[in-house]
Each structure stands twice: as structure tokens, then as C-alpha cells.
Amino acid sequence: MNRTRTAGLVLAVGVVLVAGWSGAVDGASASVAATGTHAAAAVKPATKGTITIKNYDFSGPGKNLAPGARVTVKNLDSVTHTVTSGHAFSVKVGAHKTVSFKAPKKAGKYKFHCSIHPFMTGSLTVK
Picture 1 (cartoon, one colour):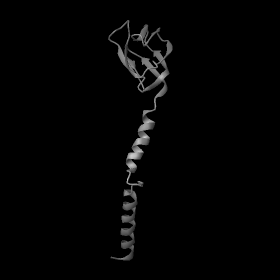
Picture 2: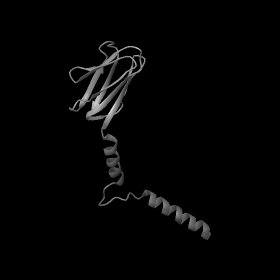
Picture 3: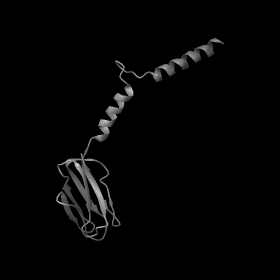
Picture 4: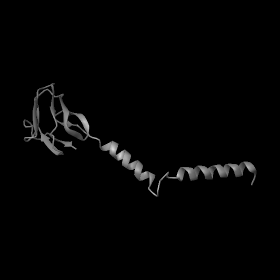
């Protein structure tokens, strides 16, 4: 083997070894530490969210909300709807109007519906 090939092979092996090194301390896995960091950032509840009503269908808020988060409801339909979840929350949204309410303070999954059009359903998760 010539020197250029040998140097290239040593460099390639060094890159593989460095890339494969976890950077772990005391036997802990770096991937576990990184996963824990990313998982904590990914689960952070949002302080606001939006529910959109269009064509008799709910979309959103699409994320986990913090207790008491501000929830905006945009009604793009030409008829009035409600966003109703028993005693937890209930708002009436006129045609082409926007309203807001505070998410419940207790963590949980809150299913909601339109009391005028009961086939319209959705859910809001408070964490």
C-alpha cells in the first residue's frame, strides 16, 4: 500500500471511530441524554392554540396546551357553531367570527363538539 492510501485509510478509520464515539461519561449513553433533552423540549405545552372551523369540521389546536392557555376559535363557515366540552368550556362562534377562551386548568384530554351540529367533534389536550 502506498503512503497516500495508508493515510486515507487511517483518516477514514479515525473518522469512523470519532463518529462512533458517544461522548458518554461514566458509561451513560449520549443518545439517551440527547433523547431526554429533545423529549423535554418536545413536550413543553403551548401557551396558546387555535381551533379552526371550516366546512363543518374542526381542526387544531394540534398541540398540547398548558393549563389556562389562550385558545382562539376561528369560524370560517357562514353559519354559527359552538365549541362545547360539558362544564369545562363552551363558546359560541358566529359566522365568520373569532372568539377565544382559556383552556381548563386541570390536565386531561377534553373532547368537544358543536352543540348545533353534533356530528362535529374534536379534542383538546391540556398537559
